Image (tube, rainbow, N blue to C red; front, side, top):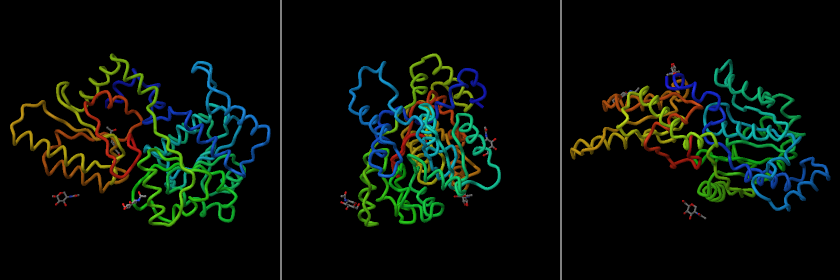
Length: 374
Ligand SMILES: *[C@@H]1O[C@H](CO)[C@@H](O)[C@H](O)[C@H]1NC(C)=O
Ligand SMILES: *[C@@H]1O[C@H](CO)[C@@H](O)[C@H](O)[C@H]1NC(C)=O
Ligand SMILES: *[C@@H]1O[C@H](CO)[C@@H](O)[C@H](O)[C@H]1NC(C)=O
């Protein structure tokens, strides 16, 4: 596939180029610092606190000379709790955070709450990537998890569903741990507004949410439906990675990637290629995307419009996961007889080639504030 055929050009970079990266480290640093500061149980010694304070009042002087904004996390222990480990947006963002924290010398531990039993190739390879970069990977349920949670300086709970981990594993220790939790919420779907997941939300140090719309929605829903109050909430938009930007600015690389991917998909250079880059699952909008695409084809035909031929690519296929939904999508393309216009590409960390190859990226904001590459 395209990934292999053009790998010589870009192989080494693509892992880092994963999806959306947190290039906004300054903002993240601010949030993490605020969480640490507001936490009454974060085991910071006085000297360290003083240092934070003196750092936070120091004005930033010139980009070239300013230290890494996360450097105050050096030697701190951070526990990252992920609901799953997969090639979807939430876990990948958290992994990116893990690597940023490793980069400044933090001790980073990772737990995956819902781990498939047996061996899963994706989990195995992602865990190895983390181990290679010095992230410690623990079982979500062992004593090590509890001990680490108790001694950690900061715990990042990723996604609303990770809330289930708290009672299940920490049990009577939950109240001790809550004040050092930063809860990173991406989702916006109705069923996440459920006390089973979020009953401890009001008591954590802070919530970090990817967009103002999502933050307002959470504010509203927790208040009106659950009668609970959001903790202090920080909106941190997701950035683009440096690596994606490099490809975007490199005309030659972009052209080569575009040619490779189009050749692989069977799309000509002059055709117009629409894409949705999301893990295929209900709520991510692939169904709406395909329906609109089909309607466009019908309109073109009905009005005999003179336009280049159009194609659609869905990057994020996974026939091992949400098979029913994806079967419905594939069935739709078959019954409408548009298989030659619709292309499914397996989930991948290597999205830059697809971004280079397409003409229009479609983003669905129906149920998730986290738009890009989830
Ligand atoms: C919350 O949502 C409800 C229902 O959508 C709406 O009527 C209400 O005005 C919203 N409240 C706020 C504060 O946005
Ligand atoms: C896509 O994934 C499926 C399993 O989910 C696998 O059978 C297939 O070979 C993969 N396709 C490519 C082109 O890698
Ligand atoms: C595929 O679509 C046809 C026609 O709409 C339907 O009868 C069939 O049950 C569908 N199959 C699946 C697997 O969704």
